[in-house]
Length: 427
Ligand SMILES: [Zn+2]
Ligand SMILES: [Zn+2]
Image 1 (cartoon, rainbow, N blue to C red):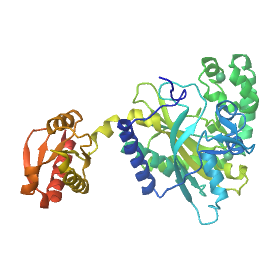
Image 2: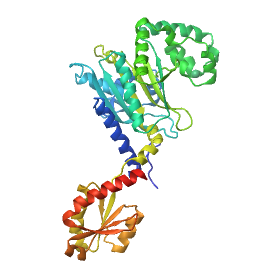
Image 3: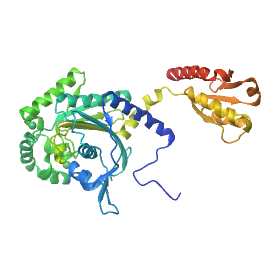
Image 4: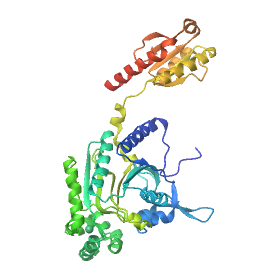
C-alpha cells in the first residue's frame, strides 16, 4: 500500500457513517427545538482569531495548531475549536444588531496537533452552541439542559454534570493573587508545566492531574469561596434553576476551563459509561470574549461536545432505531431492467432503501447476493411477472413469497414498511 491517511486522521466508511448521520440528526433536532440556528464558519481562519480568543499561552495555541502561510503571505490556522470563529462571524455579520439573545450552533471538524490515542484524533468533530446577549442565569441553565436532552436522546445515561463558578474580572484577580501566594510556598512540588503556570494562570494548577500538583493544592483556596456578591448570586441562581428542573449537578470547585475568556459558570459532562471517567465536553460563560475580540460588551454562554466520545457511547440507542427496510430489485434478464428501475422507484416512494441489480448476474446469483448483503426483501421482476402485471416480493427473513399487483405496489409496500419497522423495533 503506497498511501495512508495522515497520522491522527482516519476514514469513516459507509457503515459507520450511518451512525454519524443518526447523531447528526439528533443534533439538528435538539438545536432546532431550542431555537438555535446553524452557523457554518470556514474550516480555517486568521491565526490571530485563535491566538486572541483562545489565548497565546494555552497549549492549543502554543503547541497544537495547524498553522500555515498561504500564497498571499497570510498566516492561517485550521480551526482548533469552534467558539473563536463563531465570535468572529457574529461580529463581522453584525448579528449583535438586533434584539437578543442570538442563538447559534456549529458542527464540524476541528484540528489539533495532539498525540493521537484511542478515540482521540488530530481531525476531530465537535458540536457546540453559543448563546449571545444574555447575562441571565437562565441562559446558563438552558445550555446545560439542552446538552442533557441531547445526551438523553443518544441514550447516554451515566453522565454527571460538574459545575463551578470561575468568577469575573472583579473577583478573580483578587483570588488569583491569594492562590499564587499559597502555591509559591509549594513551588518545589509543582510539575514543570505548573511552575510555568504560576505566573500566567495559577488557577489551571488546580486542574493538573499530576499527583504532586494535587498534593500541593489540597489546602489551596478555591474560587467559589472568593466570589464577589454578583458572581455569588449568579452561581446560586443557576444552581437553583437546575435544581427546580430536577437536574442534579456535582459541584467541583477545581473545575477551571482551560481557556482564558471564561467567566462565572463553568461546567463539564463526565461519562462513566466506558469504565473510566471521561469528559464528553463542557462549556460555560464567557462574558468578556466578544469585547476582547474587538466588539461591544456582550455576555455569552456556550457548550462544546466531542463527537467521537459521543459515538463511542451510543451504540445501544443507534441499534434500536427504527430502520427502513432494504429492498433488492432482482431482474431475470436485461430486458427487465426498465421494469426493475420502475419498481425500485415505487419502493423508494414507499419509504424503502433500494438497490437494483447492476452486475448482469443470473437470478440465482442475485438471490445469493441479496441474502449475503442482508437485504430484507427482494422484488423479482421477470417476463412472466410482467405479462401478468405483478412483481414477486420475497421476505428474506422468512423465505415467504407473495405476488403484488404493480398497480397497487406502492400502497402494498407501505404496509410492508410499517410491518418491518414494528418488527425491527421489537427485535
Ligand atoms: Zn465576580
Ligand atoms: Zn502540574
